[in-house]
Image 1 (cartoon, chains in turn green, red):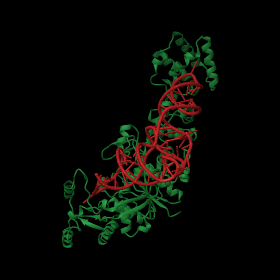
Image 2 (cartoon, rainbow, N blue to C red):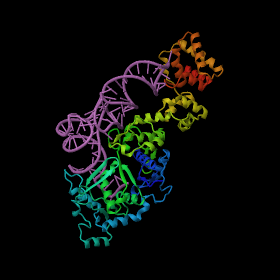
Image 3 (cartoon, rainbow, N blue to C red):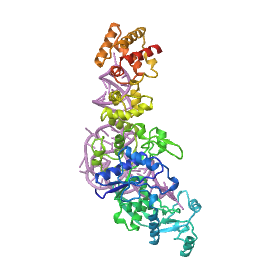
Image 4 (cartoon, rainbow, N blue to C red):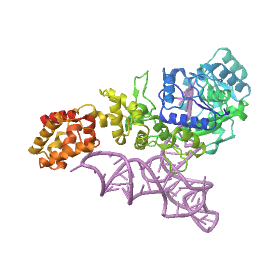
Length: 506
RNA sequence: GCGGCGUUGGUAAACCGGUUAAUACGCCACCCUUUCACGGUGGAAUAACGGGUUCGAUUCCCGUACGCCGUACCA
């Protein structure tokens, strides 16, 4: 195993949405193609936002699509603990170290004082003033206060945070694996809180300390983190670890149809899932649909996500996980955000629905049928699935496309039959019913069709006039595979009985 | 406002100085199908704007515009 170590670091505050899943995928692909390790670390330093079950949920999603981490809180590993909340001790130590080296300072401002500052310094030209270069001197901190004042405050157990002291005018640069050189002027970045009043680190301190101590070599995360990258770079430098700093890659955002960062509200607004799997928020009881339950195959999901922001430069669109591991190239990842297209996603899933054996597919389809009150027999289900798979895009499509193989349609499209209905048609179907009811079961589709044609001719009715009514009687509507294929599967007897109920209804 | 990152058809995108600017999804038409799909063929539809650099810019550079992200004791 190489020493390449990448990590996915979600916070356990809710469901895993597809942007997160794609980050996992890219992490995983990079780790695997370099023979490295994929680490899952939970960023749970904010107790107030912690959601029960969220960590297990993330594992469940990763298991669903086969991207299991090599190291995590649940499975262990040499660089644990894998939950930030359990690594508490070292964070304070490093924060204090930064204070003594002059790169950080104590800040005693209450939240009221902070909002007052933001209010006071707010102008139309500067709607959100920062705690930094121009304001820090006016606030209550160990930079503006004398040493004695600071000591007194500390001795009195005044709550404080530790903030990084951004240099006045320095240029911080780093090479992003996707974007190349990125530069920031430190005087324009604010003094981020590193250690909160409750003694817990913020993300900024925690990522750096954890990435260092867990020997992370490559850090891939969403583009929304780019603005805080200079803080992290400086932290690596001030802590004396710059030589071990991971290589960064900031992934382009996944956008909703309106062009904004994909969020929960897009799901409800546009009617497609945004989470990998169903997620019910235990606090609010809010239910969010997942791609898994919507009927996406995990392999299709991975393929969709891989291509949302990356391609190998050829016209190939269908990639297995193995192929992705082999062909993925982080430097070919696009720079701009990508709008998620649900139609295209369905197309991908359709492609994957055509692969593999009918038996395997049938097993995936079965739960959806059972959910709809149908208990299919396996062998029959497999034939049905084989017959209808090409007209299905999502797993639940098999219910609408396949139910009538197992039970008579609840209601039939009478209007479509009645449109061209004639008395002699009724007579014909009555005869057909009689014949099929008592007739032998035929296993040959051609034979079935031939006999049907013969009967039509002897009654001097054109076959074409009878096909649609027949279909609707058997299926309930104008859809489905060939009528005689359906006939063969449901059997003459069942067909006869469906004709009977249809005739009565007419 | 400030900072960062972006900008090729409706969407995803190829090309990495010379092309009739691929391809896929979606859309439209036709074919196949006595249903609906699938499939097949064809079609409409794209380089934000302005300057440079160059024999030549979609491609390189600089502006402008627009979009997104960030600007929390959240990650």
